[in-house]
Length: 532
Image (cartoon, rainbow, N blue to C red; front, side, top):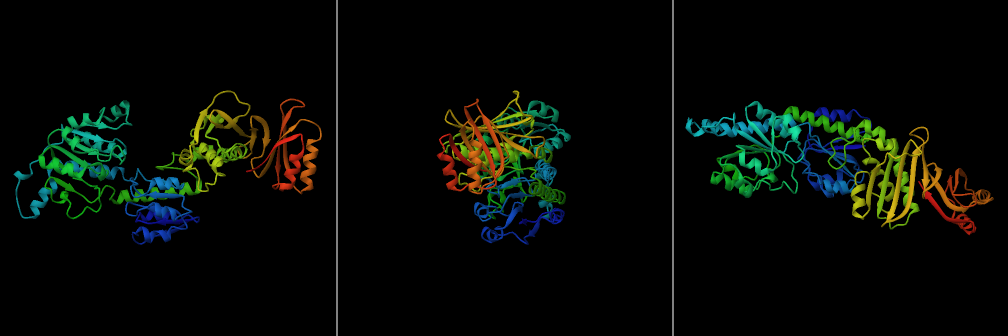
């Protein structure tokens, strides 16, 4: 498997990849443009980048074997995540690797804003001695507003508290009890922070809600002489509005490590503004952080490719190794149930209802199984690129609703996985499965609401027949006549002399002539070949 390392990462991370005999690790000597990169990704299974290389839609389209893109760092702005998801490619980052490093830079920015250290240094190197020009303020007793209390925001808050600051935090995912445990005051909204904060530091991702969040309207609501720190993403601030707020004195000073356009253009107003401290995106630029990120990205890529473990994925739910081992048998069974259901129901299905019963409803994570069922159900629809990454989005794109239910109702089997298909409010078909004895012995035990026992592999002949003597003999004779061997058989009837469901595992697909002869019998109906 080719692993393409596009940007410089820690040698220790590269060494970890090279230790695996399964990998062919190719390290590019320099950053490549999109056009230069495209010819190199045609056989890549994994791509590793930092922030320099752009993994665009065209790059993804040129990589048919690609399974995962790993980002040695937090932000994935340089990766087209939407296009990756559509193509079934997992995008992973390393959020823990640069947490402390970025938090320390953010707090260094706060200290420098308070004491004007960079400006004083520049004055000294210019031969001046001007103490009055660089009078600062103390941090003790001041209020720090933290926008985003994830890993980095939490570390910044911890350092601010150690300096005697009061910390007020805004994060829609932070609960009151957690805020109290961290020693910070939880703000109900952004305006509550703007009213009281002497310093504001940003630690939020770029989303539709956060893009341009710090704009003229936001600055107008802030305390006079507020100081702004942004080591998150440049798009969060409206540059022109910040310059205007600095010029008016509303914002006393700002420290920026990230920008809308990087590198920052030489003529950018921030470069010459006396109230701004600038650094060239140094958030993760420490020896320790680069080593951690390099090792972590190598580990998550290796785990995913070799074991299926999903960690730090931005477009797929977390699935640790232990949970993966628990759900792994259900993944294969679920895909077979979905595949069979697709072949015995009409093409107009618009809803799947999946029930997890018995021990299955106790699984810690059922999402991967649901995705496997969708993959099986839609794999015969002509979409060859569907996989567990893009299954839900592809289903949604064609109007297929997927419902899940954990049921603690009594079931016949220890493990129970049941999939029903609906067209509108009408039930179109169903399949159910379990394991006999062990997870490596799956069975389909219900088809079209009838009990059965089918090994979920190969060719299956399904039909309905009248429960009368001679049907089994007829089927055996006709299949033998056309040299088709029966590997297994299951018969189930509703009542004696009523209708029966017959399922035959076959070693090969019966020729059309054989199926026509079976269909001619007046006692047989609904003849179908299912390929699993």
